[in-house]
Every structure is written in structure tokens, then in C-alpha cells.
Image: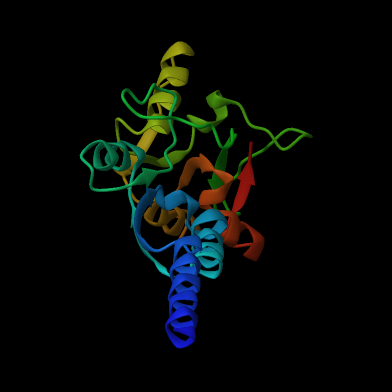
Length: 193
């Protein structure tokens, strides 16, 4: 009887231990622009804190991430948005400013605080996010309000392509700092607010 009691206690302890550990699968999505500043540190921390959870990571533009959450293909998504995400719980994580990233050879002249006007930006060749990306909507609305025409070299849903284009001297781009923090730190592109 004592042997059975010890075995029962052992099984109960194991079951309780399992109940306290998080297990399973989590599929989440986030914009490609967050890769260096958010994605890699987030995945690293999550793996340390929840080693029994299989993590599925999807990168894409916010509109795609939103659609995948609504369709049930992702459990959670981090998106850039100025719009309501109908039918989903929303939590604001951060508000980021937009920056102009440009090759150091481009004759950009920021003011004393490191800022440029949208009229200045309109004079540079740009690689921009595709419509209806929330950032692109903001940029287009601001340009329209100031009666400006932006010089769009190309549109892309790839932040990495836009950053590489800047680093290779093809033109400038507008994005949050997280999209080009590493090349900026390395000195391969310059930024202005």
C-alpha cells in the first residue's frame, strides 16, 4: 500500500508540474520592418521562457498579417495600423515616428534637429511600401494634403528590399527606424526625421 501511495504521489507531482508548464504551438506574425529590432530578440526571449512551445513566425505586411489572424492562420499578430481592427482585441504597443533613410551620397539637408519636410522628401526618388499598407496610406494622405507628388521608383511589401535599395544608392525610403536600425548603425545609410 505504501508503494502504491508513493507511486500515486509521484504521478500527481508529475501531473502538477506539467500543468504549470506552457506547452503547445503559437503562430504569430509581424511586419518585416521589425526584424532586427523586435523579431529576433522576441523569438530569443520567447524560446528561453517557453521552451516547450513550438513557435511559428510569419513576416509580412500588416494587412496580410491582419487577414491571417482573422482567418485563424495566426494566433496573434503585431501590425502597424491607424485603422480599427474590426473583430479583434487590440493593444497599442508603441507609437513610432517615420524616418527618411537615404544613401549618404544623396544631398539631403536636415534641419538642426535632424528633420526634413515632406516637400523635401518629395524631391527624392523613393522606394515605398505598397498600398494599402498603413504607413503608405499615411504618407499618401500627407502628400495629398500638401499637394505634393512623391517620386516613387518602386513599391514593395519588403522592407529589406527598400533598405537594400537605399544602401545600394538607388534612392531613399520612408519607414520606422526599426526597419533600418542596423544599416544606420553600420553607417551604410543616413536617416532624418
